Length: 172
Image (cartoon, rainbow, N blue to C red; front, side, top):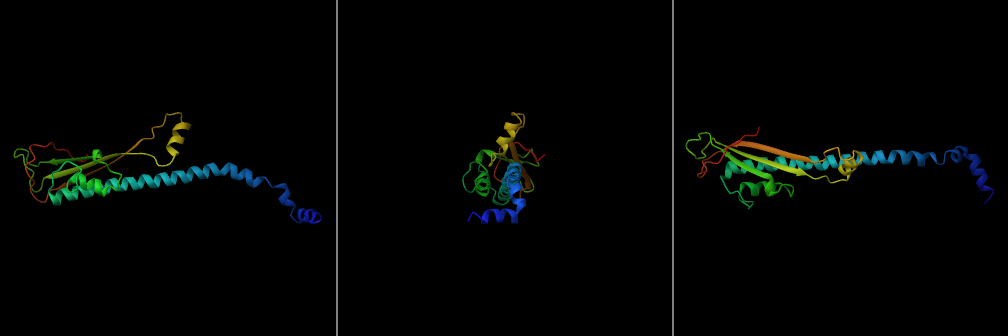
């Protein structure tokens, strides 16, 4: 057995000189690869949250236009309830704002052709520790908070019950 080791070293002399090279390269490259993977995962979660918030706003506006429901609670069958339901656990009741814009402000009623504006503003919380790492390396000078928002304005297809002069806004 002892005769075999010198023969193996003679057969592959390059291996004995470069034993630690792969380890050093791995140690130098792995943190960068790990940060890139974390960034890709975080970006994926961010895009999922953004698409979900946008879809919830569109679905709530569509529900308001068709269902003519004025409820402002988060119960099923209301506009905000529909947004929370469509929001897949990301959108919360406090993130949603629903406003009816009366095209004829003198009559105080929402009629066909008036607007309903659904605005969702959701604070995004990082899933990976990438934001904490960025904040630590920048000594707290980087703002890592992200606010996702979506605003949808749609025209009513039918008259709504009396709105009692609700204020109007647009998606600007």
